Length: 152
Image (cartoon, rainbow, N blue to C red):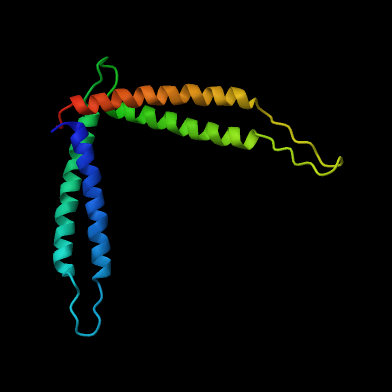
């Protein structure tokens, strides 16, 4: 199995776990002597089985990410994921900075205080564009690695 397939399977297992959990909650009570539409005991067994599959799969994904080196041999897939997440955090912070530095001209009288941006919004937007490009390039490399890497 390729790493990318395992990642897709992980998402499917997470959805299945949420669905079983919802079914557990809806079948936790009975009305009078009417039995629930599904046995909570059986649902718990299904949940445990699915949860075990998810746990094993995530363990294998993490092991693969940690031990698989990139084509340059200088970093692992896990290192690339951390770098991608750090870039995403920077992009989000820059977006917030840009939005808060953008001045709306809503003066109603001459006595109101004029607000000015403390930073150059176009410069921040350029940084966002550069960081977004870096994110896309790194994410593309990760996707390629995921489809070419066997799950350990």
